[in-house]
Length: 476
Image (cartoon, rainbow, N blue to C red; front, side, top):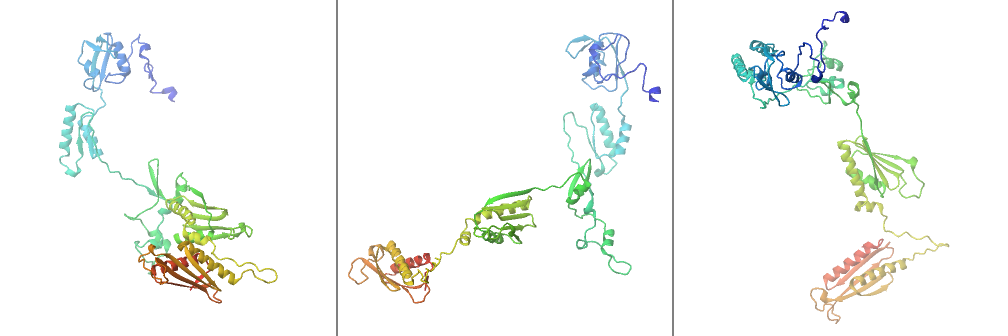
């Protein structure tokens, strides 16, 4: 039907989607509707420069012409005009003005503004005097309204900013699990109502009767798509949106040369609620150090952080789901593992006690360890330590007793008088006796005597330190 009787198919009128003014065929009569209407540039200005010198041509200005434009200038019929190239040429063409404007008058503007009822009105694109009269008329028209309901009216000059603050109301649909009524344990503010028998309605009836109220909080993910917003729970994200929830897992291998029991102690001191599991299927053969327990896994923070020990020799693996809390826990675990290898508690746990194991007896039932010989070795060790400390030491050994006489220069101590009574001027004497009792199981009794208390204290401290370093000597 449109091909046979198209009302927009004209015989002598056609639409020029593009036009080359220099090659335009204007040998016959023609009428061209060209823009822009102010003749400042574009096709209209190019055709005007080409046709302005011929008196057979004419220009019709349709509508409003802005001041200081070529359209406004030629309405006063000047004899010459300036082309776009800057040349001056005579204006011989006819110039006329036709009121064919799409602008509305005051009554139409007022009716439109009243129907829209805006909060702010800005007057632009018009003569200053005319817009001033329009602004005054609008102010008088709104003077009968309360001041808080009157719109703001502005008529800014060119290049002057006008700033307004708008409050935007944003709405979103709550969908999925968030749209369901809360559980009975979280409905303290819900109005309880009774059924016909006076009993409280069941949970399904409560959900059916629950209505959200102003001020209720909703916690979810806000998703905006194509000017539509919705709030959903993370588990409903894939159901109501094209988004998917992803997670990032991290794994870190930390060098660790200690024992699992050391790691267990440090983790339990730092964290609580640790779940421990042992996989004995990967346990190595007996005799290999550090492999007695197999693979031990410590789980914490609801299973989101795991510490695996024993899977690889000398390495502890830390695995966790990346999150703000999980990252902090993982960092603290790594620092704890590094600290567990150098702390004094770790050394005490991993080191063996300083106790000499008894030698195996020889064939025939005779043992190599002689108690008297062992006691003599301990006494000689004490003598060697005293010599290193005080230089002049005489030792006398009797069975399980050793007597040590220490002589030092009195000038090294306060009060250099001869206090020993043996005739040696300038010397202090201290006598120390170490005696192992019968069946004492290595317990020794130490007696230190000297007229100089400072010297006696130093000798006693030296013997105690040697005894403590050479366990299993016990001191009574």
